Image (cartoon, rainbow, N blue to C red; front, side, top):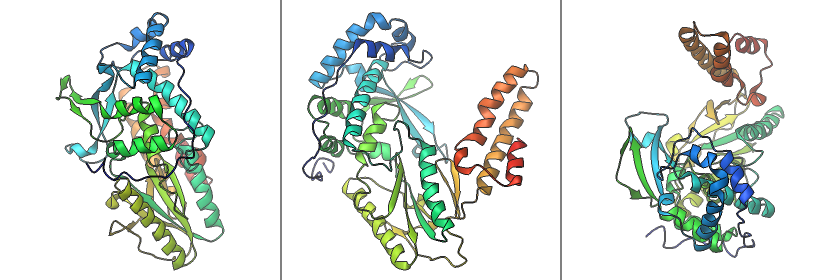
Length: 403
């Protein structure tokens, strides 16, 4: 009942209703033609290659089905089912909490999600609803653009002799804990109303999930909260839910989906106190909207060249945040001096291990296979986000070139 009772209000909405979705035959055919034929089928058991090969024949039926589904706010039964594949994250693989649930859903429903996603994004862009500091799952924005923007600001402060304190924050299972009714209230605030709101409500709240491992399936259960990972609309729902997280903060905030950094230039303990105040504001936002941070995985990094930096004990949920001299943010190792030695060491070591594996196993393969394997499995370690950390020291250049 906690999700339903006392839902916070964002106040009167300044946004108009989103325009009605139009399901165009040519657009549906184009989406069907771009399906990866090798993808696994969903709970409806319709093979992806069948949808792709028969696109022209089935599109009129899908157009009618999509139109009726959104108009009535209802989904076919198979579209409300999801096969959950657990994907291991960091940590002990024997602990269920260390697995991310990826939803495998019916492909026809995903095609409809693509169309709805496009319509919602057009509405959000026209109204400038999504905050500029959010770079996740957005066109022309990426991990790299987020890193470049953040490092540029922090680097300029460092060059000017200033200290920047970064609070690196970690949500606890953000995708899995989004309360449905609170999310629906935010959709209404942002102008997603009427039939489309009803359809998304059904899509969110009426779904059944079964965990499938090695062909064995668990009993189906309803998801009481969360947005399904592996779907098209899931990430967008998360972006809308956390869109107002930094509304009352004076410090800079950067987000890539739920990866959050709060930072500010620190010239005195008063500046540090303001950063703590903003951190507490975000903590109150999380309580208000029933989200949680994991304080044991949140850190403070002081980026400075000062021999005597300002030290302030930042607290989150009563927990004093641990200080870190380096931390992996969006797969790039940030350091308190913005020196990339640690990042380059990690990436070249990983690339060399992969290269050694290829040498041991592809010795008798044709040169074309070796080249393809090298470019696919080794070089990405050295090229990811290189615009951020591109080395200028000879020792680092040689270290990379040696791979």
